[in-house]
Length: 101
Image (tube, rainbow, N blue to C red):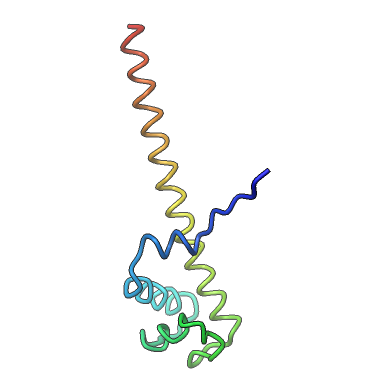
């Protein structure tokens, strides 16, 4: 049995360019934490040197904000996928009805 490898981070990276992502994370942090950080600081956070603290934020707060943002994109991507599946099923069902009508 294969493990589900549906990774919200990968989906996000696939769907959004980095600049847009940084801007959204910045907005999320401002909203969630009331802390305004620069895109340069955030860019540094996403370089793998993420252990370096952003000004005015504890590490757990940074992680929380980023987690919330990933969650948002995960739900967004999942909903988009479901909407497409429903659309396809509806289309197939309506075609089926045409033949029986």
